Length: 465
Image (tube, rainbow, N blue to C red; front, side):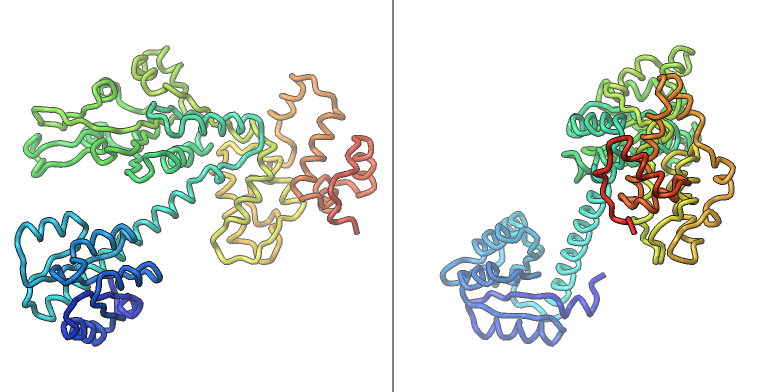
């Protein structure tokens, strides 16, 4: 809503070759609380726009020298977001249509009442404010779902990043697989907001959350009279996502009858609402996600093979945290520093870090984020302690079996595993050897000796006192 505070910040330019008319409009606007300035020549007002932006331009149509229509076009070239109201004593339907096509907000004929002009000014500024706010929110969303927000340095995550970068602007359908909580939703949104479709809608739908009898009408829509309660037409989610992305989360739960209809939409690029007699073309990029083994479901005839291949033109697998333990320190630090909550927390205690690093994280990144958020809320000082963490984390204080079993299968030497663990602790503590030693449960002399054995004495020593 355009408030009184916004009025004081709004800059309005008035162009009329009649000095008295310009002065009248400036007085009218300033009395209403706006900042207004009058000009008599189009070149002068365009020069002013070059130096300082304005929110609204009120211009006469017929003037000596540069005409109002030319001023409108040149002003909109300089600032496409500038709101423009045109006034004239020689109004015609043709000139009104031309003005609106050239970007004018409204076309007002003389004589007019001051209240009518002020009403239009308020509406024009309110629309400009809303458009600006929408663009700000769009940029904020695009920034939030940037590739930089995908945290990880492990080899498996680098494979994911490389694949995502290559397919972000491709129109092909993408299937995201991985356990629950690995970040499939975030990756789907990132793919959309970093693609050429970013300015079109991103429409998510959880196929497991909507009852089977309602899901078809949600996806494809319906026309009035299609069934008893269909009192008016309803657009489906495919139409809502036209030009953008439709994200089918938990696609493995899609009822079998709907799988055939979804396949038809993918093949024909056309949807037919319930009760409609003809189809409607749609341009939608599909991103689907599942934590199920869809290949296994196909083998057991629980999921259509032809639909599976249509959805998985590109298959991106998001690994579990157990598959990328080296990313844990980065993720923990990211969630601590990213918190929007007012908090004094600056670090985690060595024991709290050990608990977080040794826990198997069955809920993956989502569980880790929730655990850090809980700790930030409960922590009373600058340091998160084990008491601030969820109680079940203390039950897994030993290194995860899966990681050790993997090392045994790969026949890694004990010294290699030990070296990797020590260097991981140093990386997490940003080279602070005292904190790393506390985290590892050894003294600094032992840590220094180990580093000498590994030939890693050049590791940054930011805390050697």
